[in-house]
Image 1 (cartoon, one colour):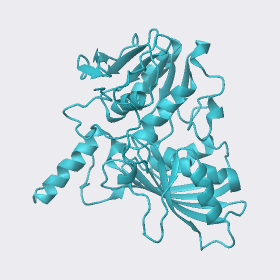
Image 2 (tube, one colour):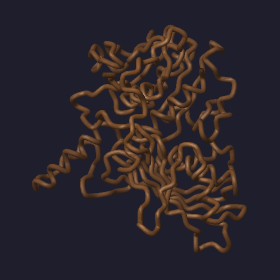
Image 3 (cartoon, one colour):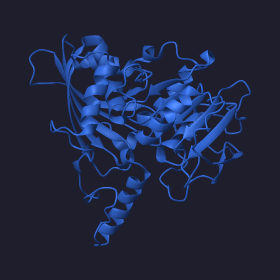
Length: 380
């Protein structure tokens, strides 16, 4: 039996689950007895930085699910995790300590170890000819660093290929930006968005593995009548919600909200588009939800919007008014597709110049690991 990814004792939330797209029947999507073809002599050499974290584990899962070709795989983490034996796709590996020598002969490095690690080691890797796909915010707004969602702006990384033997940095957008723009961009292409108002409902997964564990721990404690343990967040998370825990800036927005504003403008290459956001942390394990209000330059009605979204790659429409059935975080957890529903005309705007939509997407998967691996696929 093939091993799709790793499970650590302190991270039980990542378990073997189906990765089929939303709405698929329970048929077997791949021959379970097929020989793995990911390890290929002519594939690139790949390194994963932060392999023991939630996104690092998901990198491995996505690489396996998509049969990403590689001739060698280097698993990198901090000194705390170095030396751990791991089994992946039937082969034994040892987690190595991340150093400046880690990127010798590495073609592609997937980074998800935090901004400080990316700032220190990303340029080192690039200097050795490695193409870095970075999941942190370290380089997203740097001029000359592509900020890429493959379904949205693949042209931003034009000319960057491993065949060029030249190092480069490519930034993965923030999870809430990816999930939002997967739904908003097809409509933007059709009618051009003038203004976008986003309210996010963000899961524990966005704060990492420790936050997910704390949510589970707090839930048990509150149900048992105990005082909740608050280490990751400064207040009770279970059975509660609060403004996103990112630092609040002088303009009153927090950093998470401004990421949505600035990253949207860069990805759409539109400095004039007006974006405002309110980001909320909710007690959901993984997968974010977002309410998005759109104002357009050109008219678009809800039927046209529904048709456009139904054809958009990586998007699935769940919009059953009669059954009151719409996207939920549970529906998209461990799934690739972003789900869109509640598609309706904005009654506060005259004519067909406004829409409201509700979007859900798996923050660890499309919001992080899947997007990064899709970028890596474009490098081949």
